[in-house]
Length: 142
Image (tube, rainbow, N blue to C red; front, side, top):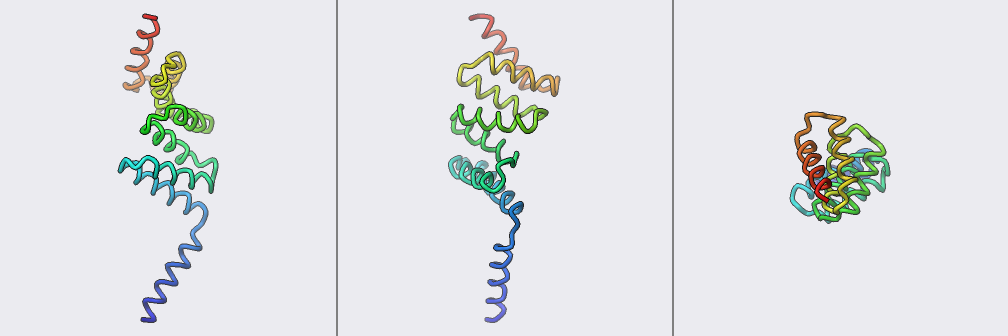
């Protein structure tokens, strides 16, 4: 019985002693698990909790963009991808995903610019190249 109580207390002490960095990563990982299981609101909640610990935690910022995109909340998706891009301008997926959100809002010129930026980072980025060409044709028909 003493051993059980000891392990419970030890586990409790470890939980309390968890660093802020550990907490933000733990919450982000919980969010990733929820996102994978298509529990988008739950994922968003975890990512927001992670950002409450560290407002500049880029993993949580980027994943919020993804979660909101999965919910087709394009405005919030664009907001978080923009926040991410402000911190890391060299991640092609962020540019691509923001472009995709712009595309879904019918903001084709903005989308075109983001796909172009993704292609500057990686000229062989097939998804960005395809969408860039598609949107270019769409704009030229208007």
